Every structure is written in C-alpha cells, then in structure tokens.
Image 1: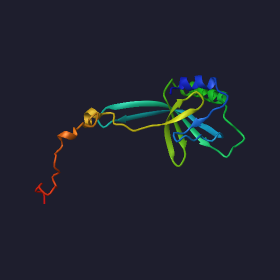
Image 2 (image 1 turned 180 degrees about the horizontal axis):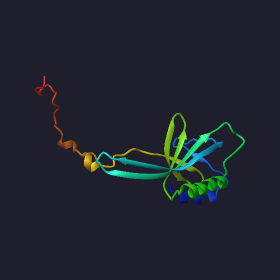
Image 3 (image 1 turned 30 degrees about the vertical axis):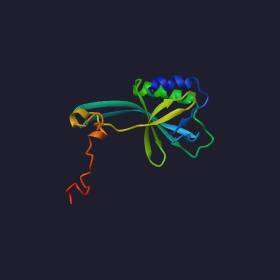
Image 4 (image 1 turned 90 degrees about the horizontal axis):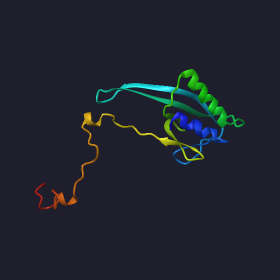
Length: 155
C-alpha cells in the first residue's frame, strides 16, 4: 500500500485497527511512534547497485490505555511528515514488536489495516544461476528398480 492509499482510507474511518498475519488485532491502545522515510542503498549478489525507499510506520504498545490514535490524528502526522521530511508517495512498511521486531507490508480489507508478511528474495537470480522454477521430472523417467535393491549390485 502506498502513502496516498492509507491517507484515503483514513478519511473514511472512525477508528484505526491493525490486524496481524495470525489474525490477532494489534491492541487498540497502540501508538504510531514514528513515520519516516527509510532509504536502503545496497549491492545485490549480482553486483547491481540498488536504491530502495519506503515510508516506515512504527507501531508501539504502551501502558496508556486511556488514549487511542484517531484517524484524523494519524492523517495529520502523515501530512506533517510529508512536508517536513519530503516524503513522496512510497510503499509503506510497518514495524511492530511482538516477540521480536517484525517488518510488514500493509493492505486494507475495508475495515482493518492488514499487516502482511514480507519475504526475502534474490534480486539477481539470473546472475546466481538459480533456476526460476524447480525442474520438472516425470516419474516414468525415474529408474524402475532402486539402485540398492538386491539385484542393484550396490552392496
């Protein structure tokens, strides 16, 4: 989800809820402690120099059960971050700590913001020699008799 998407969704919501990939809701007394831009400048395993930028939201649970983050407040935080930090309409990455800090993508189901799992990937598969998919083998092409059968002469 891009920053413009969350801003549009926030305009129509009365409350903000985040749903974890395991189906549990982030406790309603969460705070968004950071909105920022993260720049990753790196070289992949194929020696290609890359730059990636995302907008980062950090969710945090405090022992503050009396306050809730309302959609208009988060919208104001986002707009201030855009203006002060020069944040563009980038993809959003969410940090949330459960047993460890997790990084999630963000989606929306019409009611909840969904924290989606992220996966690592090789960006230079053609340089690494990694096949794009597993080679398919026909079972009929395999040996009819295992090599370690009594007549296989392996013992």
